[in-house]
Image (tube, rainbow over all chains, first blue to last red):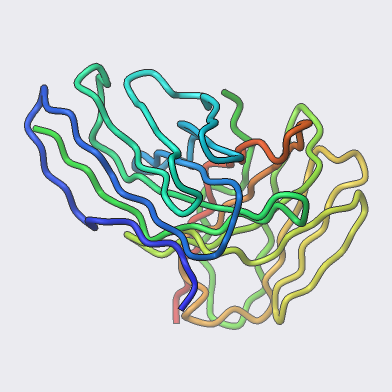
Length: 113
Length: 114
């Protein structure tokens, strides 16, 4: 089946540790996105990549880093510099040059204590 | 970053009633999207709107792209229990290289009483 996978579903880390969240898609989409969702809030854009080996900061990029070495994969690292890392993280992808509809993965809930 | 103004924040309705929610923005968007999110899951795309004034239906759902390109509404007719969830509007702008990230509203929490 075609889709977007995020793993793991739940992730627990100690404060001060970096953690990497996985996002893989087999939709052959060019662009991929990372969003953060806090309780009772909409999604906010962290980083996005419209093509391999290129990415742009979103509205809340501080304390995060990304890479885009392959079209199918867009991992997000939450660094120790991120002051409030506990959140629900969602990955999305879209085909460029078309309708630009973004499709989401199931999300990873990160808890840092 | 900007967030869209989405209202109402929550709705308590009886099964079978119609539902209406809307989003407004101070700036223009090229595309409006409406998503539904169940607890602990990723948002699922319901309807996409591409032209100012466009009215689009998907089953019991109808959405419109405002003429000014700064607003959109979503209607759900004859609500059923599985409509329960959080509905988000999202606006999209295009840049030279493609689509920028989505700007989201804070969501409308729909609760249906049997």
